[in-house]
Image (cartoon, rainbow, N blue to C red):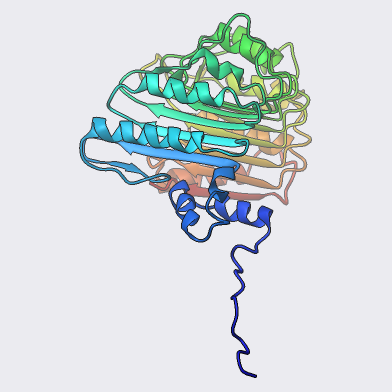
Length: 395
């Protein structure tokens, strides 16, 4: 038939369902998502409805790359302002609520007032549920007051900034996941903020332990602020010995975390009682990960441990009935570390997996002795079927 097959071709791309198009755009860098506007008239403004926005720009003395928006080069100060203007441009063209916003920038120029304006613009949108903000510059960035108007947040990830919680602010009542990495905040202010986040289920706190020391009193206050926490991660904080000179180890804090299932501690392993104190206050623990660091600048004598605990007596009351997984990294094979491993193996009847990552200083002979010691423990392992692996640290 003449003319068969002729006629208007079907535009399959434009015929895609709205939710499918949104998913496609979500997995694309913003730069590429904006370019989809040339596909057809229907696609021209689809990118303005993307529920997730991610901006990532790295600036140094050599070059600047804005991987999720545009590629800029040339003068640093001009380029970073272009980048910020591009972010504003995207925000102003928005036609739908933003559910997730991520901003990561490493800069060597002062643009904090411009970033304040970005946060001010975002603060007018109560639909933002996830906010990731990492800014590394010459000086620490002070979060503006407008930031605390993001009352719809459920996930907050902050890095390298100053956090000053306003006295009259009610916090984030919907927040469930919080991560602070090198955030400048006092203990008092942190505890007050956490108290105003009643639904918090996961909390990560990473800070240079040389400037942040946690005492037993601090830990008690921290636990009281996290009644529903299920995942607790503490990295690089120096936890002051909770049981030095005491014969009644292990210590147990006067508060329990019944919901805590995953505990990650990156601490200075000066005293076994410090780590056990946290573990013993969490009766339903399922996973423990300890990232060991030895601070040789502090007065730490590895040669003399006169009050090493006796597993059969001192740790009789510890409850690890729910523990399924143990992981220890940067293991130096010191006496305290071995005592800790033995305790876990003896007190964990449902343990399924145990992994130890050795520090490079541990010799092969030491590794063999360690295996032999664990194999011939005076008290049998509570879970003989648990897989036990020892690996060397990979760099």
